[in-house]
Image 1 (cartoon, rainbow, N blue to C red):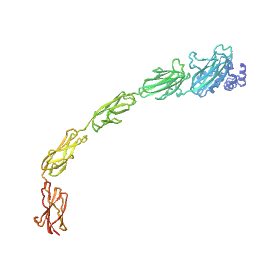
Image 2: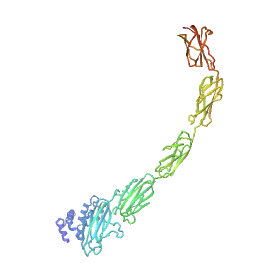
Image 3: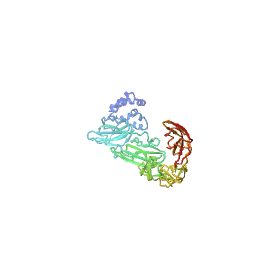
Amino acid sequence: MLLSEYYKIINNAGLSGSAELFQRKGAYVMNTLDWLTKGKISVIGRRILIGIACTVIGSTAGASLAINTKEVKAANIDVDDELKTDGTVLMRCIPANDNEDFFKVVIPSSGWLTVSAKGSGDQKLGYFGVLVNGEEQLPIGDLNEPSWDYLTYEGSTFTAAVEKGTCYVKVQRKIDWWRDKYDYTLNASFTPVENTEKEPNDNFAEAMPLPEKQVVDGFITKESPEDYYKVELSQESAVKISFSANDDFVCYILDTSEEPGPAIYCCGTENQEKSDILETKLKKGTSYLKVKANGYGYATGAYKLNWEMVPVKITAITVTGPQNLKLGKTANLTATIAPDNATNKTISWSSSDASIVKVDENGKVTAQNVGEAVVYATSNDGSKVYGMLKLKVETIPVSKISLTGEKTLRVGNSIKLKASVSPADANNKKLKWSSSDKSIASVDANGKVTAKKVGKVTIKASAQDGSKAYGTIKITVKAAEKPKKIESVKTKDLGNRKIKISWKKQSIAKKYEIQIATNKKFTKNLITKKAASSKSNLTVKYKKNGTVYVRVRGLNKDGKAGTWSEIKSLKVK
């Protein structure tokens, strides 16, 4: 196109002689010239439309690319067309009197922009590359050419890491650009990446907080070559930092200066991610992690970063508590863990012999049987550290036996002695009873003493737990007591010479003696009957009719009789 054609279009738009109108109506003119300017506009024509290009770029770049310092650089780019990322192929030509073409690319998010170009015929001499806000971006994988890739008739492709916004593709003749036109085709595609970093985070003040165990997916581009993250600790701690990347990246640990501390280096490739872990100590308060390209800073791409506290493992467990237990007793053991800041302080309790010493999950032990056992407290953090305590279970022996009860007995009588064993929680309270003279008084297994004859005897209760403890009591046996006078004797004629005799029982009487006669001296027609101690009445058939006399008395164990009752009389029919 001739230069005069540009002036004609501008005059028709009403812009001649007015720079202000030239700027205000530039967008209209660019739209009008769009079909004329695709690969065919002259160098001088491009320069005339700088102001219009500035307006167009500012209005189409989106919210992220308002007119700013960086866009001033971009505004100086004379855009030939927009290159879509849907694979649409553009066919273009750089004329003999031109040197380069520029194409705008709208980037929807962080990701990889792949650009493919191919010269027609045997035309090999050309470059192409991506510019971000007017700054050249190094093609990935081509370090020999500082900024560009060759454009050949076989076709060339490279991929660049880009941020959301607008970037530009530049196609340039390499040599002899003034001699002939240059025909080529161009197309692009875009692959978004997972990017969870919060932009901007390019310095200390804007560092993104990174909580423990939160994985951040970051993305390094020429536009945003450094990312900062902030780590907060309540105390100095050992931490593990995990870092992976698909290019030559480094992650530095910083304080509040740019003086790098320990670092993690990852040199991955586009198809193979590399990862590494750094364990180090971070101070109390705020520390920073800075991710950037290693070396000369050509690397771009994705990375993952996270950190977590390094578990502080248990190094020692000390078990304390009583080493001797009485059978049936319980005790609480204590496990002291070192170091005090161990991450996982939980332990498991166990016993070498639960039949002797049983232990629960809280360290409470119970003495089950006499013997010895070892109680263990074992760490649950994988350190395999344990503490132990040896316990001996013993019985609680009888230390004293006290016997109480009546100390005087009559022949034939019995008493139950009471035995008090000390201590009250002695394990074996069984006793063995014995008498020093069984002919005077005997004792059974329950401590029941029976008097047999007059005399003195010692009753003994001995412990059966091997303690040799015993208790004694001395008992005097006296002669059996004579029964007292029987009271409340009653008689009744039942007819047919039958008589019913009743009386009041006595505890001393072991038998009762009943006499019936026809005179008060009980010498005529006398009959004598005996009744057991359990009886309180007796029916007797007499041999004569008429008046008879009745009396009753008790007999003790020895057969000694008590006093006769009052004489009762009645008529027998």
